[in-house]
Image (tube, rainbow, N blue to C red; front, top):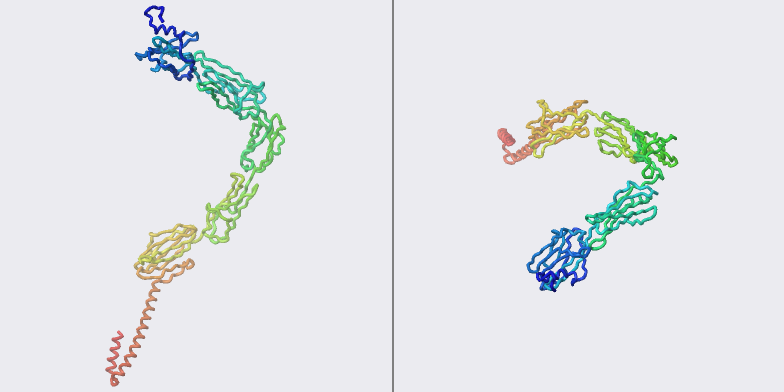
Length: 583
């Protein structure tokens, strides 16, 4: 083909001019892209061996072409035409795939890939579709409340920046709301931004509420088309306040009417089941025919047991709508005799009584020094261990905080009594002397050594429990001593003594009875002397028997040896020998 422009016009350019007539190639092909993504359009043509270059163009609405990209097959160079809307957005690969970044609504066009040889032009058209997901629908312009039996605008459901435009649907508790005259009215409208070409959809809902709509969630959704098909976005649910008239009145007592006790404050609360609830009521107190006008609460302070009775309340403008309740003010009285601090002597008798008066059966608990007793205390003869802090406590278990308690602090006094004991250590190197003392107030203990009168300070004392304790000393006496234990309190001074032998002299450990505290103890040293004397007497008796037997045997032997020896001199010599033998 030869161009009329003259011999300087090469064949390839002539072919490009005539491409609108020739246009051999493939059928329609569509590329779907999301708004803002990169549009990728493959050329979809087999590259011929004698290819000179490839070009891309798009067609205007009137069909005229606009070339946007060129790539040479020999120089491998890429050139982009100066088209303002595609400046810096195009990329043409070696296989002639065209990419357009940051997809826009205006990119919805018919693009054509052109591969040019010396004698032909091949074309492959591509249709571009751009989709924009709308914003999540939102319920705006919400009504502050809805009233039963009144058609009122509930709100607007709005979804923005969609392409193409979408549809809006309303739901009540998950079910679609269909238009219904006088009950459900839907008004839909859409607007397109002339710059971005994106749509904003708005649907207004007018709704007549009933009591069944209390706590019912309302939602809306937008249905739109994307690159992969139809999709739906759901709004957050909204719960509306439903107004309805009062149909019933109830009365409450605070605190709970089963737990009211003397001294409490009673608050009567009257409620109507309407919404909003009534703000004022009439309150009727026991024995008072006329009502007291007040807000929904009325308070009585520091109530007594005579406040027990029926309490009522009603609406101001509808006194027949009334509610009532019975209230019992619980009480609890306790009397302890005797109470406070009581001082008695050991061995005395003390009757104790705890009297209870209550609005219902009450529990009674006795405690001594914070330890629960199995039964109430009774004292026919007081002991030191009976002393302590006694508490009689009573309570109504059904009424929280209703407790009464009285206390008795019992003091049992007694003069000091002493019991002394001694014990020798198994090693035989020391002796332990213990002074056991009983009495109240706590007696002070002092040790002394009789004779010298010196005070022993190195002692060990036990804890003072139930009026008793002891003081202990450990000694190693080199000679016999007498230890004196003195116990003294505000009532009396008591003294007791104990004789202790030297450590070298063995003795039997003995304990003195408390009843013998003022009696002289047996002298340990005298016992030892008596023992020695008895031992000597026994030894002398044994020696006498031996001597008598010996003398008898000697006389018999003399008679047999020499019957003629009877003179006095020889007998004296025999007696002298016998005395020497005895000695």
